[in-house]
Amino acid sequence: MKRSESISQPKNMHIVRIAPVCNGKIYVIPHPSTNGKNNRMDIPIEEYASQEPSKSGKTAQKIKGKYQLHICSEMQPRFSVKYHSVSEQKETVYLYILPLKEESEISFQGGKFITADEIRNNGERFGLNLQQECELLDMAAELWKGFYL
Image 1: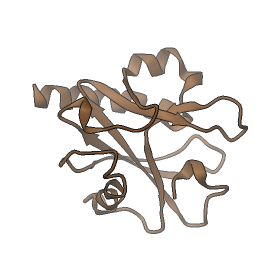
Image 2: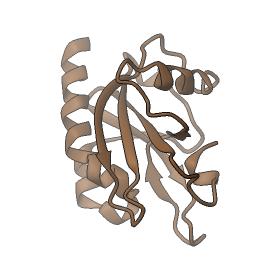
Image 3: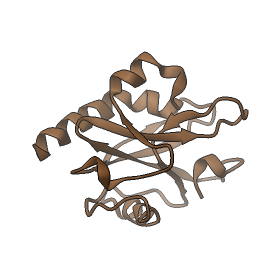
């Protein structure tokens, strides 16, 4: 179940977020807001996991597999960081990076690649977790950009 579709967080659950990056940019899609007014942009894959995800990425690989209609990359998600969200619930978030060789390897409705500067300069348009992850995702996007050049 995508987090944006759930009403409340089940007890003892963890959030797995997978951030696609390519060419020094981060891929985002519109997510419905809880108040039904403004959609905020955020990374496309965010799901609850009933068990604490391992750093080996097996949970993230299974989650990525659910989105095979949208992602045509052989690359696997790589664990990046575990942190507590800025929300009132202080959820435990496991952030994974999904490096892509080409921007065409991913396609979600309304999705687009953006720079970290766009997040920094227009924070109100983006999810709180994405704002919190911005610096780390910027570094990861630049790292993978250099890897594929």
